Image 1 (cartoon, rainbow over the protein chains, first blue to last red):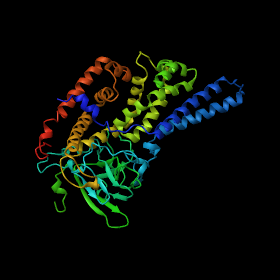
Image 2: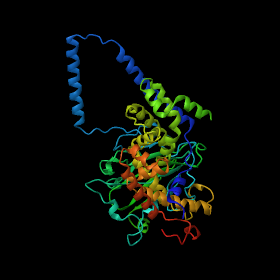
Image 3: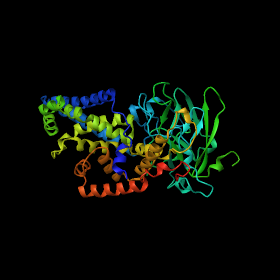
Image 4: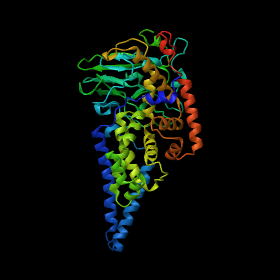
Amino acid sequence: MTDDLERLRRFRDDVPNSTDAARVAARRRLAAAIDVERRGRTRARRPVRQRSPRLLAIGLAALTVTGAVAYGASQVVVHVASTGRNGVVYPPRGSQAVAIGCATTVFSPGQTWPNHWPRPLVNTIVAGPIAWPGILALATDAAGRGGPPATTYAPRHGLAFAQDNLAAVTDGAVVTLSIPADERQRLSLDYTYIPPRADGRFQVADGASQVTFRGCSPGSNDAPSSLFEGGFIVAGAQCAQIDVYVRPTSRPLVRRIPFGVPRRSCRPGG
Amino acid sequence: MGADDASRREGSDADLIVRSTVDPEAFSGIFDRHFAAVHRYLARRVGLSRADDLAAQTFVVAFGRRADFDDRGVGARPWLLGIATNVMRNDLRTEQRMFAAIARLDPSGGGDLLDLGERSVARAAAAGEAAQLAGALAGLDTGQRDVLLLHAWGDLSQAEIAQALGIPVGTVYSRLSRARSALRQAAPDLAAERHCSPQERSR
């Protein structure tokens, strides 16, 4: 019997070593931190100037005002943009339409497609240049078995389940996903770094109703597609409809994704 | 040989860290020695592109906390991997997503997604094993996964993991044992399974 640790050591052993660019960038960040400390020391060694009582009073007043503002700010919910990989700044939570590009892909240009990924893939929904690998494994059989049970998707304390699934977009393609208006109360898209509300859950409105993916330039990747991490915010088991717009056509490709429901129920008329 | 000589000349990790409290630039020596190992550990856990950022963060955080470094004669690697593990706390969802995505891929069937090339039997078997392992890892709780992966991918001993995570060594043994047991249950030996046809493989 193969030792379990040995198998684990082999798993993901195909991850390439760091690139020179990554090392240089990291070194630069460390150098900046070192520089900040060095400057701080230099400043600390400078003689402290005598400050007038009037200036001190002004400083104290400024501190008080700043503190009050900071306290006030902490009392309200602030929707701020979040920063993802490669320093990409994402739109704040609840943005209706979001566009993301190559910098946010899971395996960046020049990096290898994981060797242990099966090719070709099954359980996959494809719509033109976009595919969701493995997503049909989320369907149940007719008896409600096989995939995640419907209860997985039941909202808890008003918060919906985040169903992660990578999206693979053909390099060079631009494709827009849109949730139909009448579905937006129970489904949204989460392909940016949206912070969860609690327990890894979200309000449906935290996600986007429309996401545009721009695949990496052709040839920039070892694989022919760009992988975007993220998924769906799903309130209740459902057969979720996604409209996929591929330029230059204006008519969407309609795909239905079974989240905790039988696959058959997602067929037209099913 | 040359690198060893340079290492001896510069001193141990502890020497460099102590020296860096007077001359901050000395900490660059720690970066040069350990960046590759830290980056690789993170890349295996959260993917290559996230690892670039997190490895950089790890060394910035380590530099800021170097006064806390407690040398126990094992060098700085356990300490750095412990910091790396903490730095990636915000990326647990990324890791979870990645393992879950790999686990959901079914290596046994057909389809022609994106024309990715030919599938060999060996690759499918390896993919099956990867999917099982990924599923097992996704199912572990965070504490168990940290201990298991610091051991398997960070090559740390139980004592070093205890130092890295700031937990008692008894806890490390217990978590490691539970994690390995969960792993064995979720991903049993596939040697026999490789002789089965895809149709026979249970889902």
